[in-house]
Length: 82
Image (cartoon, rainbow, N blue to C red; front, top):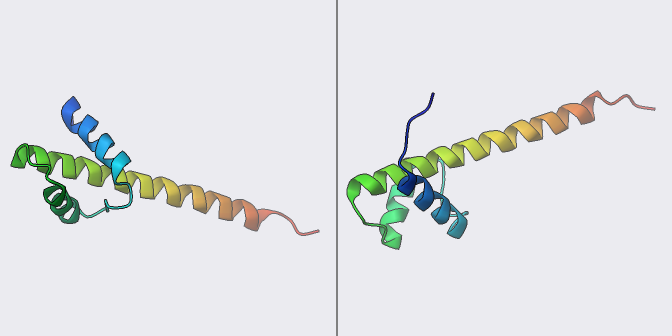
């Protein structure tokens, strides 16, 4: 099982990912710094939790993209030539 996160962290993370999809990376420190830049300062603990959740979402998205690209390459390579 995974970690339990409060609804505020999930909601804020999804909203920020919708607004700035290209600005977030798989690096926690960069995400935390970006949240400081845009003024997301309710509290240090909440900012860190949101940055961590966003990092996790980005890593998951990257893994999904790699797995779908790998599957499409395998199907192309295994097709018999005529």
